[in-house]
Length: 286
Image 1 (tube, one colour):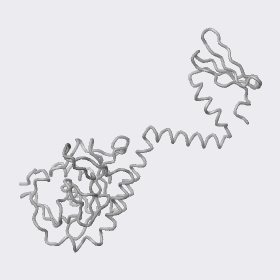
Image 2 (cartoon, helix red, strand yellow):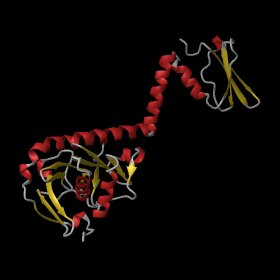
Image 3 (cartoon, helix red, strand yellow):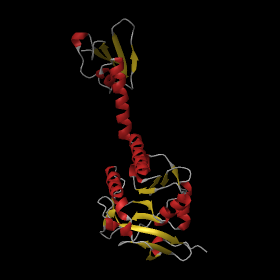
Image 4 (spheres, one colour):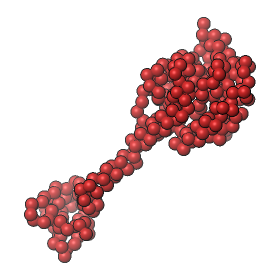
């Protein structure tokens, strides 16, 4: 019977291969992975455990090699990854709770998830686990039913199952798992999902709106001042008589008319608690 141990409670026994014999070929791309993920703040520093004063990069990643996979070690610096930070996991015995691994550090606490993904999805050659806060809040993807942290076997199987339908899955309140045929494919997807999430943030929406407005203004030759005017008088009623050369806004009294060009026929009038602002079509045309 398979046991439901927390991955931190698995015993470690020596793998049949020494990790030093298989690290060299994969190390450069894993080193690059940490630096790329750092640029999108997907491996943030956190204090673990809380109150300990020990800070380290979160997240982890792995690549399939030999009869198992190389994975980043628990509590190691994944941004400035060193070869000593990698662990070769050859097999996991879920009946006896034994990890067959070789390395100087203990494998990531999400090691069971990585293992189940490789077992369930044979076309996967790399797995990335990110803590992309922007994607967590604003991203769109399939999700696991519940938040999952560290993951025992049952939870690891749930993540692996979700990744049978897509290469990107969100763990609510936690982070994301991304897969690819190789590490570069997984990285590209993680970066793209982050980019899309950024566009959904308030700043991203404003930037997108501003870009669209700029393009529209350029294409239609609309002066920028008219765009600002439209926004300023958004709560007002606009009247414009064709051929008159003027436009009038009837606004709440607290809305100012701004700087008027009286010499061009612009005017301001308050009547019955309303403020009327009349502008010339020459405004913003210079």
